[in-house]
Amino acid sequence: MERNAVPDRSTAEAELATLHAQRAALADRAVHPWWYDALLGLLVFGLLASYSARNPWVTLGALVLFLLALRGMVALYTRLTGLWVSGLRQGPTRRATHVWFVLYAVVLAAAAAAEYLLDLRGAMVVGAAVIGVGLALISRWWTRIYVAELRGER
Image (cartoon, rainbow, N blue to C red; front, side, top):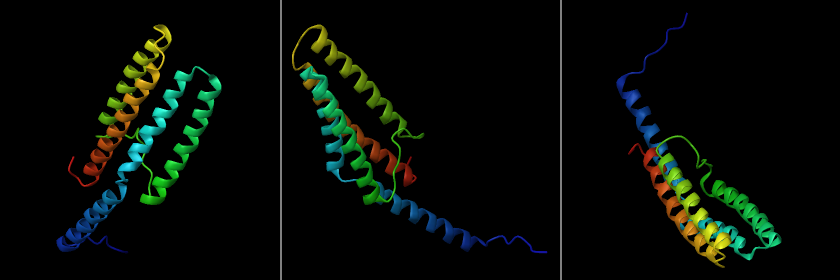
């Protein structure tokens, strides 16, 4: 009959230190380059600005390009970092995700109302620019929150 060995204090401390080092390395890998956020914002800008053309074929083309580019960004991020993290995950990053959804809904509704109800041509382009810049900034914020969580700072 085998006894369950209880590790001594030094072994447990060494294993804990290794675990902390691995989480810190993961946090370092999870940070993507600044241009990743900028590209994400630019893609959303392009898609939403296409609504101002008031041509379903232009919007459909923008949607296809948007989806293909997003797929490419996921593959690139996975290749650069070795992981993929959902933006909708539970945890401290939820706050940034909620801020993004509110910004998106409010600005998109205002821009769409101005463009289609008030017939202000180009309002969707302005709204798309606000949303795109907001997304780039919120994406960077989200990443900082996630990295702090991995490092045990949150």
